[in-house]
Structure formats: structure tokens, C-alpha cells
View: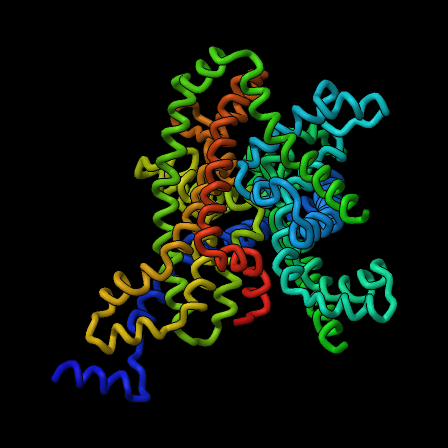
Length: 285
Length: 279
């Protein structure tokens, strides 16, 4: 009897309602508020706690402006480098086969898995004037460690997997027939790449760029070892927050944090808008 | 021809930026021989740092695991207004600098923080002590498990659970016997990534730790202290433990992706998914 009854229940069009919605959503929202939203709101509250004037004074000081310029500028360069080489790496990993490909593919995630402090000291050892790479570059008068160039190197390391992992699935899904059609219509491989493949990849490239950029702007661990941390020259904004905190200047630290948060959200929004524009344009063709 | 050129460029770039730093860690760690290496990693302060790192991860990862399961159950199994906003907010800690993640807890629990006076009156410490380290770690590793589980649960749909319920299973039975076995690989994948971040976090933890040797020093912080004391070989020896953890994480990740190829796709496209709200 019971079996028949349950079979009938399954057969009916009205499906049983899964339990636990209130409990899980409630828990999610409370946990999110307690651990993320309320703590983050503290930064905004504290930054204006000493008044607008003080906020403006902190934010417009030459040292803070220099550090913000450096953080955003170096991140922009690193994310651009990653977009170019990330595209090549993901193209090679998707399209070609070569020895140790699986191993190399797994290695791409190293920057996600390697603690940033380890990356920092290791890159410094490599690029220091007496390091494996640094010594060779020094012969040409290029110093990487303890200069803004070192910051770009560290941020490139940190951001690479974002671009590769965003592009790989898109490249795998790319229809090869379109390329073949372009080739049969007389397009050279270069033309096919620029006219057919690249437009399809733009949204993913922009997403990868945005993710690498966002990560780089806030990066601390891998940068402070290699940067040299000279005020006005190679001092990144997160480091300035730390040194304000060490002087118990909570309002000053919060003010820089707010500017960083607002600027990086602004950049993310702009890139998102650009990305959906690129996706739409590609879709219309 | 262009094929060989592109492969060469890609391998050169990866060799320069990924393989060399990894090799350098081990080369530096063993540069003065095994005895020095063994002494550095068996130093009482290093062992205390290992212990603290394990403790912090043992608290932070389960907390985010419970949250991840609850959040993905609500988001993947039900339709409600504001869902995409909720997903964006869960991802928020990824967009925040680790230093800011540490800063927020100083502002709340520090000496001049919101609860600073109360904590002092009751002789409790949060920042510059272990609770602060745990809080900062929870914050930075917050989204990992949820964002792996949400797409896994979404692709699985509700059919299995609905069948179990209509056959008379209770909600808990359905979760333990149907949902959990279905998502186990995704769950493990998320735990692996969350754990790697929790054990390796530097910036956020550095801000709230106070750097008290043997007490509030995690492994990454211990690396920094040794390095700043110009004790490079010891710093790299301790760092090699963390590099080993990273390699194990990558190996485990590859095994899970090989068992369940969808995980990899999920991991790769999740940003697109959550941002644009694709199913």
C-alpha cells in the first residue's frame, strides 16, 4: 500500500518542496553579515569618524597619492602582461599537445596555492642583484628587485592563473568550423585569428584581466619583500595602511582602505560594462 | 612553425614566472645542507608556528564548510529575489585586499576599536591573539567552498532530493544520504582550496597577529620574521614546508579534476557564471 501511495505521490505533478530554505538562507545571511558585511562597514564608518576634512587630508597627501598611483599602475601593467602571455599559454594548452602538458597545466595554479610570503621571498632571491636572474639583468643595467619593476614581476606571478583559467574553457568551446570556414574563404591564419578568434575571446580576456587586476591591487605578501618599500617610490598602498595602523592612526588607515575599495570597485564596474558591451557586439555578428 | 614558436614562448614564460620561483625555494632551503635544513624546521619556534597554523585552519575551514553547504543549498535549490546580489556579496572577500581584511578586525576589536574598551574590561583579547588570526583567516577563505558548491549543486538539480522526500525520507536523511554523496568531490575540492588559503594567508593575518613568537606566529609569519633577521636559509627552509603544501594541494586538485572533469570547468567559468548570472 505504502509503495503505491508513494509511487502515486511521485507521479503527481506537484513535486515535494525541499525543506531547509529558511534555515540555510537565514544562516547564510547572518554569517555573511557578522563576518564580512559588518566588519567591512567598520572601515567606512571609521574613515569618516574624524570628519571629511581629515579624510581629505590623508587621502590627498603626496605619499598616499604616490602609493595609490603605484598600486594601480603596477597592477594595470601586470594584468596587461598576463592578458598577453595568459592568452598564449591557454592557447598552447588547449590547442597543442606536447610532453608534460598535464603537469604544466597543473603548475599554472601554483600562484593560487603558494602562500604569498613564500612567493615574495623566492622572487626576491631570484631577482636580487646577486640572484639567478637578477645578476644577469644587472649586467644590462636593469635592476628588478627593490624597484617598481620588481612589484610588476610579483603582481604578474600572482595574476597569471586568473587569465589562463578564464580563457581555457572559452577556447575549448570555440567552434573550429568557423576558423576552417575563414581559411577556406582565403583568410591567412593571422587574419583568422584577428578577425574570427580574437573577437570571440574579448569578453573572457577582459574578465581575466579584471580578476588579475583586482587581485594585484590588494596584494601585499608577495610585494613587500621585493619592493624595497621606499616612500614615494616603491611603497604600495596596502603597505601604507599597515604603517598607519602601526602608528595607531586608525582613521588614516581606514581612509586609504576606503579609497582603495571604491577605486577597485569602480574599475571592476567599468570592466564589467566593457565586457558586456564586447559580449553583445560579438553576439550580434 | 608558429606552433613551435608559441609553445616555446609559453614554456619560457611559465618557466621564468612559475618554475623558477618554486625551484628557488628548495634550492635556497637546502643551500647549506640537510643539517641546517633539519635544524631550521625542528626549531621550537618553527614547530609552534606549524601547530598554530594547523589549529587556525582546523577552526576556519570547518566554519566555512558549514557556511558553504548552507549557502549553496539555499542558492542552488531555491529561487528567491536578490539571489545574484547574495552571490556577489559572498564573493566580496576576494575583491578586498588582505590588509583591509585584517584592518577591519582591528577597527572592531583593537584597543581603540568598537569593542576595545569592553574587551579590556573583561581581560579578553581578540586582535594580537589567536581569535583575531582565526577571524582574519575565516574572512579571506570565506568564499572558496560556497563558490565551488553552488555550481555543482545547480547542475545536479533537485530531482534526486525530491524523489527521496516523496519516498518518505526526512530532510536530514535526504541531505546526508542523497545530497552529500552527490556533491562529495566538489566539497573536497572546495575544502582543499580553502585550506590552502587558510594555511598560507599572510597579509590579513600579519595585520592582526602582533607577531608574538611562539604564540601568535603562523608559518607564513615565521617565514617573514626569519627573513627580516637575515636568516635566509632558515626562512627558505620553513617556506619549503609551505611550498610542499602548495604542491600537495595542486596534486590533490589534479586528482579530483581527473575524477570529476566538470569541477575544472566549474572552477574556470565560475566568475562568468556568478557575475552574469548564467544558469
